[in-house]
Length: 224
Image (cartoon, rainbow, N blue to C red; front, side, top):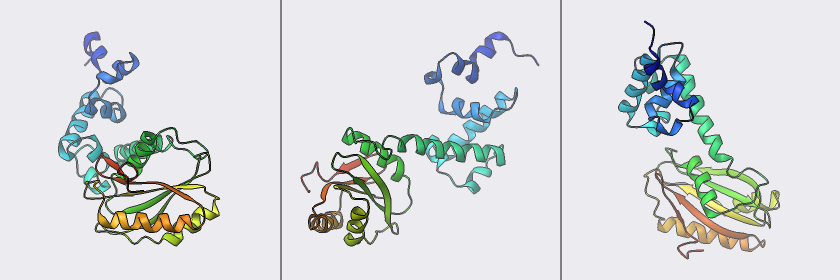
């Protein structure tokens, strides 16, 4: 059945073309990716089911392939679309700190780390290696652990810092519990890594703990 002009202008794609992206809901934006031909109603229904089932866009993108295809209307093509969307979102935020770029502000660093670490189901301990002008040399995940913790070896941090000729280092790790508050173990490993780096004249600038949408800087707490 033909769609009249009033309805057509209200469709998500039409509103996107009219530079009204901010007026679209999460389900409407997803429906733009899912829509094939004129089946905009079906695409919107599937989008709403997904968001209702998982409790929002972020949780939908973090769902497993098995969980996603269990939703009626999600086949291989739409599953691939969701997987590509998640990867694109992560790469978008990663470009806030590309190699060779100088760190402009602590906020940029925290945005980058949140995008990389907040949704990990296990602890990941990372290092951001910088030159003497605070330009990014390398971001590396050094250690992975269980949901209860991870083993960190300061000598490995120093070894990699020397290999890239770093002048400074920022440490980061996530708390899968979602609570970013640093633990006593976090403070101890910070002191151990700082002492090891000082032996080779490399500065430890910060240790940032990532929670669920929040982050805490140990430097801002006066712990470094």
